[in-house]
Image 1 (tube, rainbow, N blue to C red):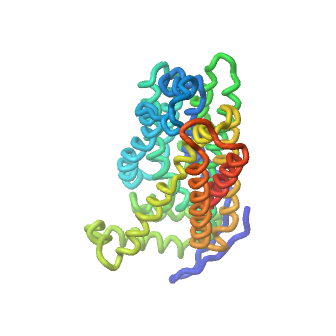
Image 2 (cartoon, rainbow, N blue to C red):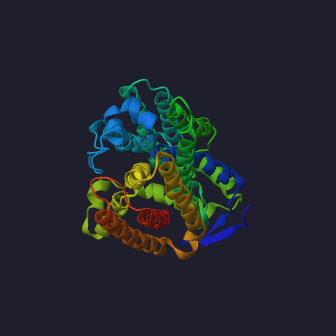
Image 3 (cartoon, rainbow, N blue to C red):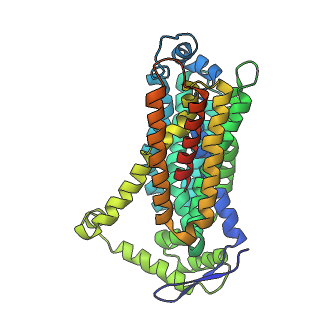
Length: 398
C-alpha cells in the first residue's frame, strides 16, 4: 500500500491512500482497455484471413502488380469490417451513458464485458463475412459501454492524488491489448493450414471473460450510490473501505453537495451552451475529437498494411506493427502514468502534440516523395518511417 496523502479542499481535508482493494478493482475494470486495444490490433494484413473473407483484396495484393499501392486495400467490404467496430461503439455509447447514470457503473461494465465476450466468440468461429462483421459489431457495442463506464469508474474509485495515474491506466491497458494482439498475430501467422487468424480473433475472449466475471464482484462507486440511491451511509462505508481510513467526511460532504447541486439543474444542456461555459464546452468536445482525428487509429488499425505497402514482408510488417503500436505505445503510456500527477496534464499534452505534428510531417513527406504507385521504398527510408511512427505513437501515449 502507498502511504496516505492529504488533499486540502474548501471544507476540510481528503484523507486516504491507494488501498489494495482499489487497486484490484481498478485492474479488473481496466481490462476493458485491454479488450479495446486487442480489437484495434487487427488481422487485416494476414493473407489467409484476406483470402477467406476478402478475396478481391488478396488478389490485388498478391497477383495484380499493376494495381497502385494506394488501391490494393481499397475495398468497401474491408472498410465495413474495420469501421463497424467504431460505428457500433458510437451508437452504443449513447445507450451506455443512460444505463451508467440510471443503474450504475457496474452494470454498464458488465454489459460491455458480455458484448465483448459474445463478439469474440462469433469472430473466432466466423464462417462468412456477415458473421465476421456481426461479431465485430458486438465488439463495438462492448467498446461503447466500456469506454463510457470504465474511465468514469476509475476516476471515481481513485484517490484524488493518484487520479491521473489511475485514469492513464485505462490507456495503458489499451496499449497492452494492442501489443498482445500484434504479437499473437505474428505467432499465429506462422501456423500451417491458414487458420491462425481464428486464434487471433478468439483470444479476445480471455480478457473479455475477466471483465465479465470480474464485474460481478466489483463494488459500486460512492458517487454512484449517492447519485442514484441517495444512500449516504452506504456511500460513506464504501468510501471508508476504498480510502482505507475512517475519516472521509470532507470528501463525502463534497460528493453529496455535488450530487445535490446537479439535481437542481433543470435544463443542463441549455446551461452548458451559455456564454460563460463556452470555453469548457469547446475544449470538452475539441480535445477528444482532435485526439481521434490525429491519425492514431489509422496507425493502430493499418500499421501492418502500411508496412506491407512500403515493402516489408508479411511477418516483418506484423512484427513492426507490434513494436510500433504495442511496445512503444505501452512504454510511453506507462511513463506518463508515473509523471502525470507531478508535471500536469497540460505539459504532456503540449509535448505529445508537437511530437505527433513533426512526425506526421516527416512521414508524409517521405511517403509522398519516395513511394510511387508500384513497388516499395528503400530499406533506409523504410527504417526512417518506422522510427518516426514510433516517435508519433510515443507522443500520443503521453
